Length: 373
Ligand SMILES: *Cc1c(COP(=O)(O)O)cnc(C)c1O
Image 1 (tube, rainbow, N blue to C red):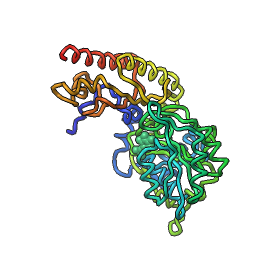
Image 2: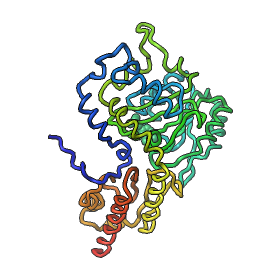
Image 3: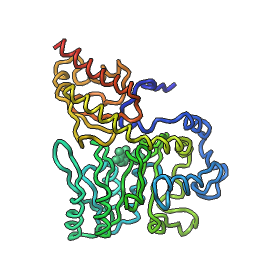
Image 4: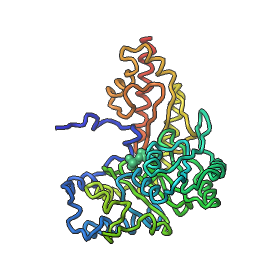
């Protein structure tokens, strides 16, 4: 029943490579799958539960891992962003965000009734966010209203670019604007530390990058924000208003916790992941498929531009679905059906052997249609 067709495929879907469950998490998912089972011994709030040891996880292991004073579990990165924005929002105030920001950052701002000012990106081919532009945009926006928050997407979900977050944090500090680092594609993949960055908030996605089933996210902050963002209900004294009392009250948090020791170890191997991504990018380029975004690249998420595959799609029997079909036949999953000219993929967690297999698949597909054409 409800069989997943791509179960044993090589997965290069950027959304999915960092969210694959560990064996420990799979067991936790089954063990804690019943509704509200995590609440067996609840004393009033999710992160206070000592059995299973959610308390230790949220109060010590997680804050240590991301370098924050206070951490909370949310139902996703977007909910974490909304919690911060809604807490900081004022009438006619602005949030400054990078032009590569995820759609959910815009929607969170909209829901929190904040106005948006964008830090522009550079043009083709790198689409970079330059740190200094934050100063310009904050300066300009201040003329129209208070800037209550700045946000940087690190990396963005389109090009996998990593802006100079230390410099951005310094600029925001100079302007006395709190900074939120959206690490949905970073926390759990690469080393991340809020204190080292010097920002105020950090947001993570469990199902994107921390080997959890989700939906689940993490919000980390500096102590000074605790009383505002985690303010308590007047009527229910121990419930935090922005978290609506409790967030991920199900198996998702146990999968996050079960995978956590593995995640702590895997971020130490980040250099190897970057090496693989760069190798992959280089080989794709030699097939005539261009990598856009920062080069040399610093993240496993990559955006490609392929005139070669696009030309083939114009003549192929399956049209623009040819690439999807060919890759599926080769048991490779993750490039959206219908895409040929622009697509993204992620090499995260693939072995060198798998990496080479995917590259040889692209090569043989191009060869095959060249012959036919
Ligand atoms: C995937 C993604 C999100 C959304 O994460 P959720 O945990 O599903 O809310 C937010 N920002 C970026 C940059 C992303 O890539």
